[in-house]
Amino acid sequence: MYQPAAFTEDRPEVLHDLIRTHPLGLLVSAGAQGLIADSIPFLMYADEGEFGTLRGHLARANPHGPALRDVDDCLVAFTGPQGYITPSWYAAKAEHGKVVPTWNYAAVQVWGKPRVIDDAAWLRRLVADLTNSQELRLPAPWAVEDALADFIDGMLRAIVGVEIPIRRIEGKFKMSQNRAMPDRVGVVNGLRALGADSEALAALVAQRGDVPDA
Image 1 (tube, rainbow, N blue to C red):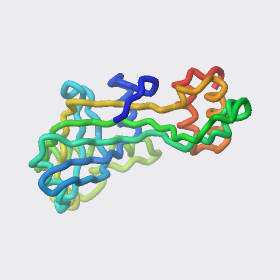
Image 2: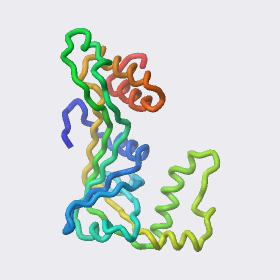
Image 3: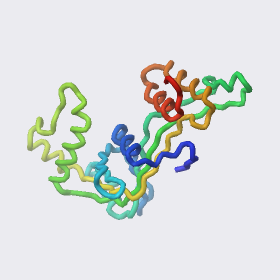
Image 4: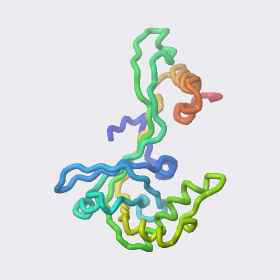
């Protein structure tokens, strides 16, 4: 990932937090069949391994599972808040007009050797952990135990687990840090004017750019 110094983020706790908040990762591997990619939700186990461990699952029928058994490395890409930035928000537009559009985004990329897992107890724990990570935020959370045991057993037989001990992790938070403060203020105000869907991105621009009173 291209890493200009202004946008680089290497604190593990910050990178892990983005993965927890935006758990849908793009899993990419390159083996005998060429490049394969699948979007799957992952859980971050930060206290396992040097940089943490990712766990998720694939449909047993997915050819990506067998392919992962034969590769020494894979990539998982996560994307956080992101959005288009119009030059109309920059104070510099009125000053000299030498401005162009860009795209702000937060991204984390993870590398590691994948392990494909068929163990039923391991899969049950993963599915319960993944479910709880989302359901516990809801007013009436659903639990795996709410479903019929035979039904869950059948569903577990239809998936395989994927475990990736992280050997390398990189983060990039491109949030207008390279712009002058008046431009950063304009970006924050412009994003907030778009409504709730852009608030998370606006908050990151404000935080990363040290925008006062934002």
